[in-house]
Length: 283
Ligand code: SAM
Image (cartoon, rainbow, N blue to C red; front, side, top):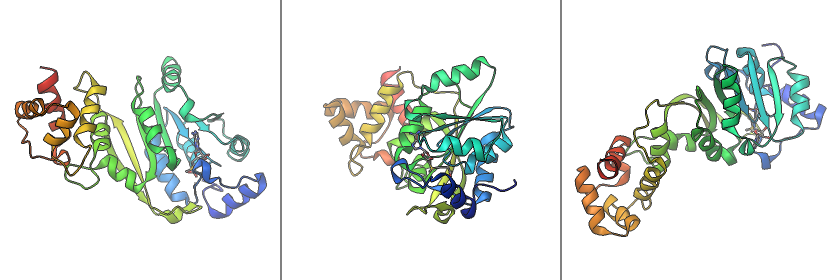
């Protein structure tokens, strides 16, 4: 890559040229290390023939590499200062910039449009930290297929998504996410590769959707999972009793699923939760 944007020097030059200094309110921390964006882009683009949708391109550190490894990149940016920067500084005919709050974007309509064109879609982002979970859940809830989602987020949040039973980070979010997706860690990223540097380290995760989702009433299942984790120190029996407002029913449900009432939610695997649900609600 000639003259990458993801260096401190080039970032500073572009910021001066366009008076485009970082805004904390939009979660702006730009990557200033080309090796990092190169690795994220390679992981995100697959074979290079799918559409890559980037959320929050900023001044283009990652976008530039996505355009290198993919034939078509569509980038959604909320900050009105950046489309001009991206179009001028990257100047690739692989790139389309859309000035729009991604949280307001109709993801299913977007996916449907590309599906009609016979194209598969991948997502890539160095996510704005303040809306990591809402953006990811918006994608997880899409009704049409997504090939992969490759995203950088705060390490603590990534640890929660990927946590396994008995890990201290394991919670309802871990179970619900792992129900929907396989999660692969692409890399940990030191906080010094960002400008400005955040207080915490980051991790890049890649999500790919599981083909089989065994529960029919997913929303109700997710509510049950959340209820089981409601008070971490309490047993699953206690949490379920409160949720159902019925101690006997809680005990009967656990017995039916073969789960000891003294168990805590954080000891149960995704399969255990699915089993608890199915033996009681889908038999
Ligand atoms: N991709 C660039 C990089 O890696 O250097 C910038 C990443 S920065 C962490 C997050 C970017 O997301 C910023 O450019 C910010 O303006 C943009 N952003 C914040 N909220 C957004 C939203 N709701 N929709 C689209 N973009 C958003």
